[in-house]
Length: 100
Length: 484
Image 1 (spheres, rainbow over the protein chains, first blue to last red):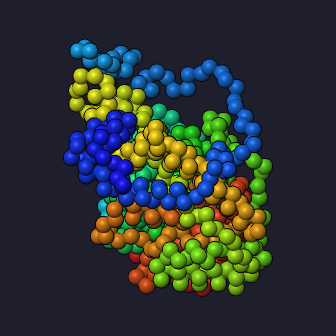
Image 2 (cartoon, chains in turn red, orange; image 1 turned 90 degrees about the horizontal axis):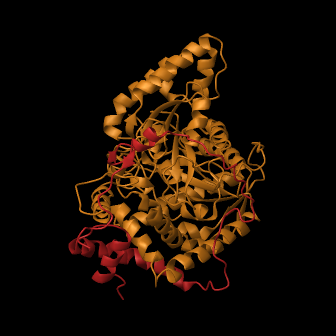
Image 3 (tube, rainbow over the protein chains, first blue to last red; image 1 turned 120 degrees about the vertical axis):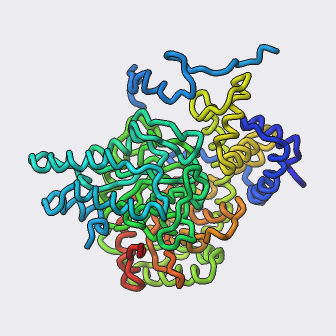
């Protein structure tokens, strides 16, 4: 049974925030199906009584540093990588279309 | 002996004794890079200017009698997903092609504090997603032992740079084998430390519950020091765990209990199986006790790994939205359309595939069957390894199913994932694992031999690996540098 019909793939690309055409999605489908056959191996195992993995250091106390305010990098250094900026602000297109 | 043939330890000793200057060392390695880089493609950026400046400063400090760090005058290459302040961190992806690191990763701070010369940033599969270093948007890297073969991945640039003696030491990162697999393909040492032993502050995350930074070297004598240096304290990574101070106490491998699971070698091609058997026999002749252990659960490691890694990748890479991080492409009416368009234009096919699979295993209706299931199986795999390590000091297994992949053989994504079959278990369990160079095939390609130790037994693992390789060298061709 195929898990990846076109609707599912469209929904996944939406979740993944990717812009994919139907042609691209169809091309990806074969590889995704093959990968899924690998993932399905796990269904052979009975795991109801097994706790999910949490940490390889279960029970180790994590010591957090003191939460003190600081300015480690400087505004200009951090904004230097902004894809688009206006003064000290990061520019984006509208969050929602004006048509809505 | 040429300067570039020396280990990091030898270079440091000669520099501190005054028999060679740091400038001469830096120039020798930069000349080597100039000669070989066009045919190997190991570096995304060579830090020529800053490395020569560091070398000149070191020479002046040595002449002035000032204290020098333990890596003074040793060139070290850095996988290009670790931040070096004011240098690009591309992660091998167009999404970060112009990203300038605003700070040093903790491991870089530690290297700089010990006066290492940072010689360059090395190539990788984009964001560490790949096993061949062919998924980089910057360039493809070739294996120094054979230009028609892959160096492995994703730390293929670091492995190729060390194997070709363009530097004695490099840092890589290992999420499912990305240090050990290329180390095996390139005939060098590669260590994935215990989860948490090395700070990851300043590393671009792929799968946070699996990622580790580790060293890659051509001489075993460099491993203890480089590990000691990069595993120093960090208060900015809450997963960092120093543990008690450890010593390299192992004097030989006499009576060391080496666990092995014969069924595992059925996954190997015939010459690789023979090589592994010979090396195991060599361990026995060197005085180790071979112990059979049950590792049946490991057959589920690959599926478990890829479910968890893809799920974590899909969330970690959400930040590359061309607002917070990432390259913005074109003008779009809304932020959402702009992010989608930019991500699709700048994230490569393998990265997109893993994000899609991650979204799938985390989506309503599939999360319980895949992601939740994988986390339970992960517990079983970790328990299986822990039980085995209760009866032996280290577990031995091959690092890869075969020698380096030929580049003219097309592998589909699943076939490429299968190359990680022996390396993913230790990531899932958070255990330290080491690739040791272990001879050559008839066609002259290196084999690797992997050892896995219990959590935080990294120092013992390094010591045992160092002794073992001496035995391997006595039995087989001496470790050497490819003829380039």
